Length: 266
Ligand SMILES: Nc1ncnc2c1ncn2[C@@H]1O[C@H](COP(=O)(O)OP(=O)(O)OP(=O)(O)O)[C@@H](O)[C@H]1O
Ligand SMILES: [Mg+2]
Image 1: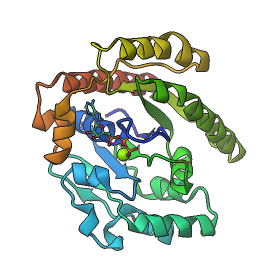
Image 2: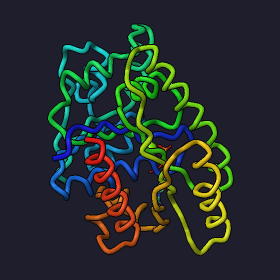
Image 3: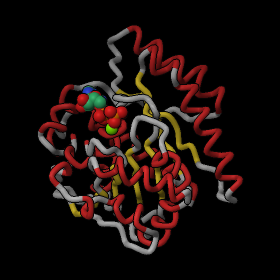
Image 4: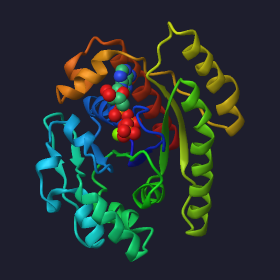
């Protein structure tokens, strides 16, 4: 037990591996005896699908966000999965709930729900949607830490400045609301293929120049293996589907690093 850590898995760019990382890091932490809750914050419901929960077929009341939208007093709906992880689901009803949350103009509603109802976990991982939206802004207030997956490709590395800008904005909002600063655990290079010169170049840029200039730590990368995608279609965490895949070892190394950070902090 290391104490509660609420982590936003955040990058406003699409397809950088946020959902896969939430699934696999969450599962890896759970295999180490941590109590882990993962929360899907994307109306596409990919995280729920990845964990075999069939979110698309479910009514609004079965999603996590229904209670968040309806009021902080209501306990959000959480579900056990087959994989020792608990999940808060999202599906297309999140689109309407998000609009309604905007109209209610209570930026700290999610934070209130989290503080009132989600204290029985060591880790709460929020899988952010690939955009800056009301839900993302609320997550950046409700989380206390952030992990930013970044692909080692030109477009992704260039757009990293936007991630940094969003972190600065979140810190400003948190300060205005007298919340402690978000702890940036660091950048996780994803979909990394060390055989590609360009990937090695962009990884070196991230570690040698870009992240140090913002004071961000860079974790060792999660390599690109087709088994990571296949695990998604098989509705399993990578470590269940392909335990010997080198990307599973990469996730394990990341879990060790974040556990160490959380115990240093606690
Ligand atoms: N390490 C990896 N190796 C191979 N494929 C990967 C890896 N990580 C993610 N992928 C694949 O890349 C695609 C995008 O990954 P994922 O859905 O996790 O990204 P995302 O950032 O959550 O996307 P979105 O922004 O749409 O929510 C998926 O098809 C996934 O299976
Ligand atoms: Mg996703």
